[in-house]
Length: 361
Image (cartoon, rainbow, N blue to C red; front, side, top):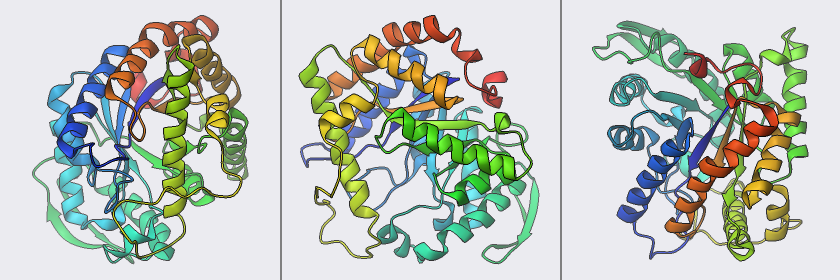
């Protein structure tokens, strides 16, 4: 297995300028590459301070020439918001810009506010995304392609730029729902899930649900490539760790607010609304790999043993976490945490099951 850095780029205060946040993100990705991370993930969100990045492919194109080895992933492209011919061309071109390091994460989206502004109803997003995954799976890498479906109708079209990877970049499916599990199963794609800040038992339960889906389809659950998303911060300072956990709660509050199905907002700056039974910063601190190197390693070893991921992506900066603190945390993860994990489970490349295709190459 390997670890990734997840760049949500959410903006808690107007003093966090967009150019500076982009520059900080690039430095954090470069630090993650030096620390031995396998993938850097970039999000797609629109119209609020929940996330600055409207295009993961643009961020990948920006970061690609400033890195050497780390793979660059979209987490996720929302294909229902795109024109078919344009997205096929942009994905292929992005993989060329990344010199074959693109990992294509796809998802249906959950924010009605942003979907409706692209003419997509939340109730239809899942079905549209199912067709898009079939379309992209077939079309990427083709010099000539046509497709006729319920939502996508592309006449025979030539594409002069093919992806650098043959036959195409690996496609990951993001989401915890049965629909997401089905998409991953149908195309034999890795499944990428979030525990939403809960403990490792929550992730183990999600893994068990996915295993059951595979078994019901007559498939071996050990063939499931299962990825997870976690809050992570490495520091010996308890106050700094608690501050990061509070920033994680901020992000959870915004995400929860955007899941209400609203199609209108009062402002681009989302309210930090508490909700019933929400986690406290102390809960987040206790349930996530946050703290000194030994604590972080212990919790990630437990995840490897109980959940068997092939990849774990880490939120390592949230809200208004200082850039300098995030950089120290990333460096400590590579210098101290990874060796402790490997001391417990052996070489990471052999941990998890099965070995992801990109790691075997």
